[in-house]
Amino acid sequence: MGGGGGRGGEPVAICRLKRVASDLRDDIRPFLPDIPEEKNGKRIACVGAGAASLTVANDLMPLGYEVTIFEKLAAPGGLMWTNIPEFRLPAKVLWEEIEYITDMGVDLRLNSPVDSLAALLEEDYDAVFIGSGAPKGKELNLPGRWDSEQVHIGIDWLESVRFGHVESCGDRVLVIGVGNTAMDCCRTAQRLGASDVKVMARKTKPHFKASPWELEDAIEEQVEILENHSPSKFIVEDGQVKGMVFDLVSWHEGEGGRLKAEVHDSKVIECDEVILAIGQDTAFPWIERDIGIDFNNWDMPIVDKTTFMTSRTGVFMGGDAAWGPENIIWAVEHGHQAAISIHAYCHGESLTDRPAEGMNLVSQKMGLHEWTYSNDYDEAERVKMRHVDLQERFKRLDIEVEEGFDIEQSLTEVERCLNCDAQTHFETDLCIECDACIDICPLDCLTITHNGPEEELTGRLTAPLLNPEEPLFISEDLPQTGRIMVKDEDLCIHCGLCAERCPTAAWDMRKSDLLIPYAGLDAGEVHPGMSIMDLAGAGAR
Picture 1: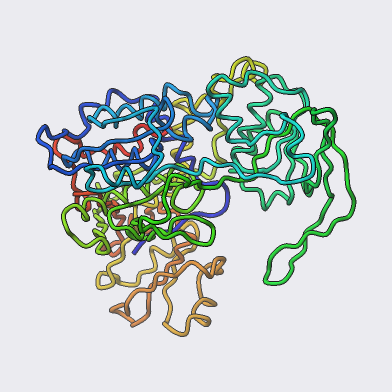
Picture 2 (picture 1 turned 180 degrees about the vertical axis):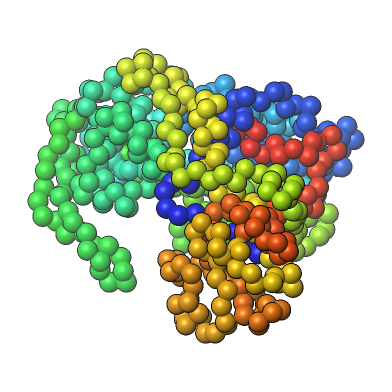
């Protein structure tokens, strides 16, 4: 049976701990897969050099494929390069990660936009993957929008900053929207000289789309976020934006559960520049509508969510291009799944029969009171990230704000882990019902009782059931009395005390490894020349 989560508080900072592993790593190139000199005769074209296409290349190159990536810009990376500022993702880190893939022998064609998918399909490629992202920022068609050049689309503005076309901005800047792109825009504006930056949100904080840590960083940098301000008009004089008019609103549930705005008043907020960051759309003017790819009512290609193939055989999609903007992690996962499908397609195999995941379950016991994992749970709060001093970070755009955890912080944060991979394992036949495990459990998550209807059974648990949504573990009938062992997974912190105390080893702590299949690899397999070590997060930032 599996162990559950913990009680309250923020989870372990996995991403930041992966960064520690990356910052302190040695050269990982000797552990990367060997690339076959003799190719398998299959050629794959990828449109766009973002996270999804790079992942497809990463998975297919070790199998002997020839992969060509077409990128319209002068550098790879997609929105990772053009829209994530260097104070969040340093270019040095991004290039190093991308080079691990391109150095496999990928035919990377920069400054090579694909203007016609029909023309690309006429070339000698066995499959095509579209990972062109969502490069079109949403518009805000309000009075005055087109009367000034000081109103910008967020993702286009960030791209202009990245390529040096924009080096300054107005003193008073309004950023419309409250997603992650908006956070990048407002923080970038400060670094370009703005002293008064406001983020305008139509709704309240629970509805903000930005990640909590992105909001925290913006607030720390003294960006003002105004809630319940719905834009209604641009104020422009002689071609210069002077401000915006906002409706002051409150929100109430309307028909079908959708929130409906009620306008109470209006307000003018002065500004010198406006950046629109209200969302992104896909854009496919280069995909002809008569080549067998079906589009939906939102003018997006219809993509199978299992196989990642479009309605045209051999054309696959992933990342933001497939279903709209998500995050980089999802784009990478799309790339993995699309690569599995492309490999199956090129070998005439079923695309719907997905390779199964696997799992190892191995005892962690080293002695009566010792385990191969640290089980000394620490209830401390999440470790606070070290940041560059406020005055220092605004001097240049490429000063990375987060400094990462030091060794002491890393060790402290690691000890907060609930060891979800160390599962409690119970052998019913070995239990003598001595109650030792129940006596020693620090959270009272174990109960031995008679079976019965679930509603009645939950009332007899040693500790009250705080999370009914989390399933209980219920054993088979115990050999002595016919009662059952019940475990509240939601309370368990995987401390292993039950297994230490059990005189018959009915309880054990077993490490579970989730084994993931990739293109051409069954779960748990690795390519020739590749270390068994988990490199997936070794370079994660």
